[in-house]
Image (cartoon, one colour):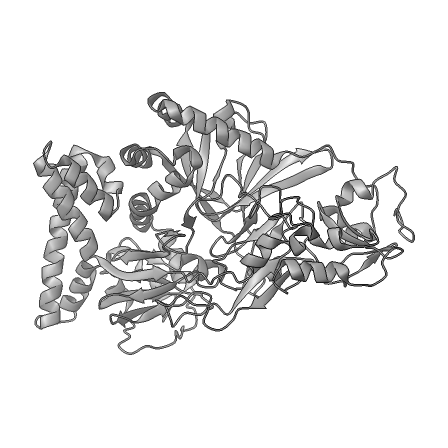
Length: 604
């Protein structure tokens, strides 16, 4: 007999129902799940009733549960089994369920004509329906009806409050405009795999940066990553009409993930709601016709990799590219000094495109990443979900879309610049050198204490550049005659990038760490950084968007970006030092033989 776990006690809400395993089994989401697997976790599933306007969760708050919006037909089956036969609410529910049956028949009709149309969102379906009105009026009517029914299933909205960046004007001017009136060329470019225009969320949708709001439908799951990894909530979910949701703990979610029927249902939702956007986020696919992208979305393969499993290895033949659906992938490359980390790729980003573009073997190794946030939770192996686009499908796109080849070459050139690295010397210093993690520093901040007069000009220059909020603290350990201040060292392995629930931290074009405006202040990156280089700065009251007055972004993570937004690329702290004591160096080259080690440093 399976071991019975202690009774869970989720915080109560008015109208909660704790259902028996037999009642839960009536729901389609639990179809195929053995009752014994649910009996093991008493109290771990609660049926919640929500009214229009209720907030289910808020961005940035702690999260440890997942939510499933119960479809109307499941709720109807439950109520009828409980003996509820009459009532206005039940009558309305029956009417809605009858319309849902129409949706299944209409979907079949549309799929028979053109299955790619099912992947379009409601607005795109209507636009396509208008275009087909003369050519195929029957399909046009069906497509418009399908869009109407999808909106009938809408139950909640998901929003992200992006607090205004209050130091933008100062960043544009730079350090007294470099004292010589030189301006700035704006923030440095983003990596080519950064999903353009999309913010990844813990749910079945991503948000557009220019309008961060989307709709959640019946039959959809959200909060999965918070539930599995204890990540803070990535957005605010507010109910738009009366509905019922299942809230569940991690153990129940893990039971569902092993269920074939549930996996197939979530895959269908992903293909229809998210995949086209993820494919469109690739620069090489951005300008493709909606129908072409929808067709590709129907043909790609959805695969899983266990944490630590290699997706592909450097030197392997290039037979596909991958879009990351869930989890993270670590990209590494062999170098004279060992293995260097090129990047961490998260939801919506892609890997493996270079081999296809150049028709060359893999130039890097990609590994499914497992990294537990240090919150005391038990670390468990997690899977990474990927979307595989084969070489055959990619080559077909190139043949059908001649303009695509030029886009492909442009992306390849940009990625070459991103990953380019000059030949580096490898330090022979160990001991204290390794203890301080100096090997990580590609742009390590050093202060030569034999030259420094403690005038603090470096700190003031940094503060001036960043609206009075310095990114440089003239404190830290010593290595010989050098002070190692707490400032971003542009690590070879930037673990600060792991775990951001909204994907707001990433590398810029020259390797600098960038934290975007939609940071929710969860502190994960600050906790991950081994060198205390990321700080949390409070935001002024009223930073929330006017349309979401109940949501407040109280703080934002800030990090030294090497002054990458300034036109000459010279960090203000280095520029301002009157004694040339402030340095930004590649630690491996700076401290390597035959260069003498700093005074007091031991080579062993």
